[in-house]
View 1 (cartoon, rainbow, N blue to C red):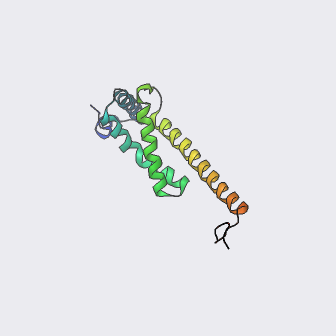
View 2: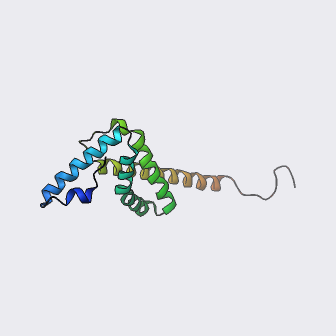
Length: 133
């Protein structure tokens, strides 16, 4: 069962104790995710999804593309869940996936635009069908 962070952290008074408690909770959630827990997956989505979405929107400048990218980030997380290392920072891992997907998206858009630019310069636009007058 996932321990809700607000309830879990209210017993700690120093910032260092809270950091330790957060790290322990994150490790527990990752272990549960490795075992296929949908509850752990939803917990991570709720915790990091809005931050990843905002980050993606700020870089892609398109909310629909950013929402699709968010889905891809968490799909990749689900696909690799069995190999996750609970000693690693899950937030860093998710944002690394996000950044790589942003780069991929920008590359694809640049290639697509370059193709359109090249095609428009090499093939003249005509309104008649070739061979007809």
